Image (tube, rainbow, N blue to C red; front, side):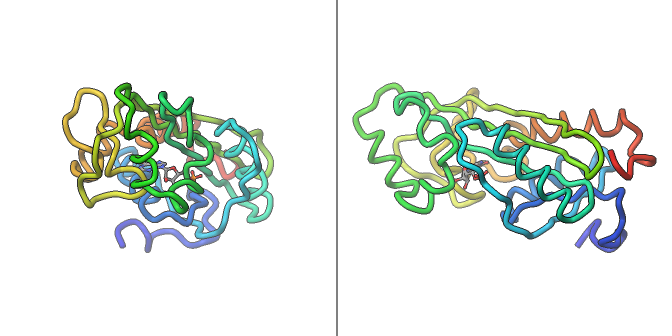
Amino acid sequence: MHGEADTSPSDKRTLWFVTQNAHKYQEARRVLDPFGIKIRMLDYPKTEIQRTSLGEIAKFAAEEASKKHNRTVVVEDSGLFVRALKGFPGPFSSYVHVTIGVEGLLRLMRRQRRREAYFQASLALASPRNSCVEFAGKVNGTISHKSAGTKGFGFDPIFIPKGARRTFAQGGTEFKDKYSHRAIAFRKLALWYIRTKPETNSQV
Ligand code: IMP
């Protein structure tokens, strides 16, 4: 795959994204590529502490993983916050997706006329020696009345970003990169990363 062959696993200048979600990884990669930042997937289960703050969850996991693997890592924690459900599922989005799923969430929303929601992503960049740096991204939108589209993952089939008429799952990659919470957060990370001279930052 493009970008994979030119870094060895021991290359400390490579940014390792600790995730088991290939969709998240590909999204991050598409955003970082134009900045010339190499990213690779560290397919390893991140530790998820029980917190309501996505930032705290990401930070804990990133600090732990950077020490364990002795390299610079980035961890992302994200969730869908639905206003009519008082922010549910929020930090529990992953669990809710595998249990009641998209259709279950639509059922909870059946009688709701207020359909505002947002996705949030928190990124934590950690290295064994330096303190953790955090970035966040948010996209406002609405929950659709029915599931639409087959692209993407998670709640993509029911989320319509503000200013658009399609769900993330109908729009596909370019559409997702234009609006997504993850793309916003990774662009912030990229701007910070290139400012801090990555050629010398084996510790970031
Ligand atoms: P976690 O960050 O691994 O805890 O997972 C967050 C969960 O939120 C995912 O499993 C999805 O269900 C949902 N989620 C987060 N970001 C997205 C997205 O970009 N599209 C669709 N669902 C998402």
